[in-house]
Image (cartoon, rainbow, N blue to C red; front, side, top):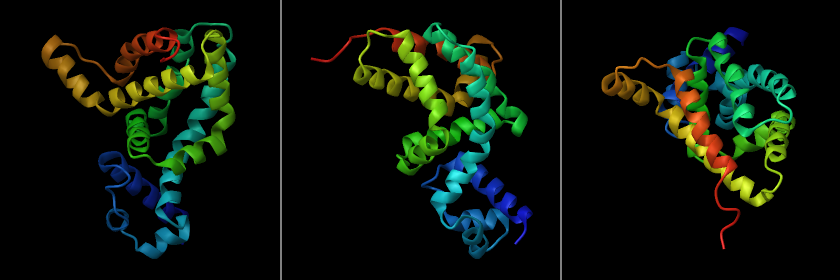
Length: 208
């Protein structure tokens, strides 16, 4: 079975996963969209979890080396500056494929919202060193914040990011109709970063 078949399956799965989510997308839909049979999917990927991971791997393999380079130049700085370093790597996914940034964040959002625990294990296994470097850098900006409290702040920050990115089309339409502004996904991210940065940097130290 050819590499073209594998790519066709990945492209079909990516489109359906981004539009519908992982749980709502059936293998039958994927095989129909890719014009292959189930045996082809099983041959290349084994199961749906592996297919989900393979779809995201195409993005992470391009993204994470760029994030790594960005973090290497973000020492001794603020939370906002650290997060702004991530904009260029994330936007570079548009070069991977048209609309790549929005597709990626939709996929990430579905993984976050649908409790795809295997994705967290996959990401930490393959890209954990870069994520750890980001976490350490954020910790260095907030030396007085305990690890547990920082976990909650980062969790809520990620939730804000996922929600804003998954609803980015609606936000762009509202900006156009209510404020006569034409914005793109990068504009949404740049509006979000100051808000998220304040949330990570401030707030109560612990809940009694």
